[in-house]
Amino acid sequence: MPESRETVAAPRYLLRGSLLTDGTCSPDSVVAVTGGRIAYAGPGNGFDAAQFPGAEELPLPPGSLLLPGLIDLHCHGAAGGGFPTGDDRACRQAVDFLHRNGTTSLLASLVTAPGDELLRSLGVLKVLADEGLIAGVHSEGPFLSHTRCGAQDSRWLRDPDHELLRDMLAAAGGTLQTMTYAPELPGANELLRTLTDHGVTPSLGHTDADAPLTAASLAEAARLIGGAAADGGFGPHARPTVTHLFNGMPPLHHRSPGPAAACLRLAAAGTAVVELVGDGVHLDPETVRMVFDLVGAAGIALVTDSMAATGLPDGDYELGSSEVVVHDGVATLRSNGALAGGTATLLEVIRATIAAGVSAADAVMAATLVPARVLGLETEIGGLRVGLRADVVAVDAGFELVTVLRGGRILGNRS
Image 1 (cartoon, helix red, strand yellow):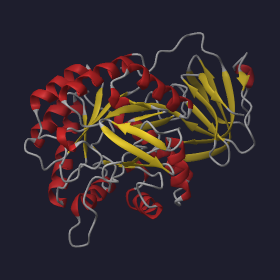
Image 2: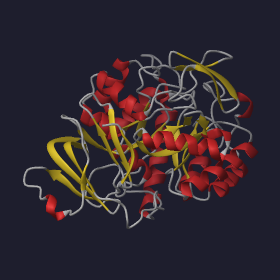
Image 3: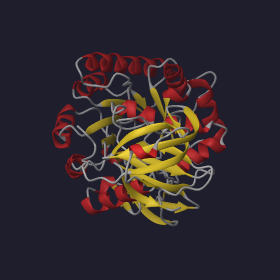
Image 4: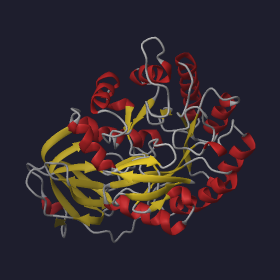
């Protein structure tokens, strides 16, 4: 299902800068946009602008970089709007803010809630997906560990309930893309089969499982995805994911490695993709750099885990049914002080990841090409290549936002 609807009358634009896509950086480049698609992306030397009559060259500051539109696989809201609310206006408010701030594609993430609330939220988000505003839905729960529930409302956690899952799949109408699950729960393997049979990527997380069970579950999920991919159910590079590695699971210990060690090993082997909330709050910068060094950018998806406070001042907010306090940009539960999502945009996560010592090319790849592959949309989004949707984020030398195009249309221009 295409994620956007374009019009023939979309404007033509030229952008000049260093091209940062697919894990490489090419200086002195040009991106030409026409009809909502990328018509040229390559060297500026010898580029013939006459091939694009009427194209407007967008003014960018010296040293600008051109990135693909950013893709967030784990995002609960922004700008005062939360996706778990099931409120159409609030959801659209969040999506608009995220698009204008460089996240041109995203999965709207839900949290654990009563079944009827989940179904209502899925119905609202299906409309946004059908309109091309979001790439689909990520359900974080409700089949999660009580022991490692984090900010999830433990009242509504449950073992895999296949009747509820079938209802969720029906309400989503093909828009449910990923689901977080704890592999130690009874019925988890049957859950994996149902998810992959419906083209939904399992995402291991909020778990108290040991390393062997974690490894076995991810390997089984990868096997099921591989079989479904052969029938067209997934893209060629699809892999199971790990919901915010290190968060919502036991800490890695040298005599009790837990799920984190198994996730790192399988991601390094190409069997899984690990999410990292590289915002400088959820993980120490040294941890982020270590994971990139061990796994490589191709096995990492940078995410925000952002909630409604993103883009807004400190204060009181909600995440699902939970009361959240944001102080100095850090969101915690009022009840027990547990981290309750993030408040950074994906571009801010990229900046923090680069500050941690990761190369700009790797950080951008983990926020563009890798999540596009998880979604099976790498031939539509996630890069700056001819024929792809014209999602372009121009930043200055300090990775501050300058211009955002989505589907060839300017959403924000701060030059």
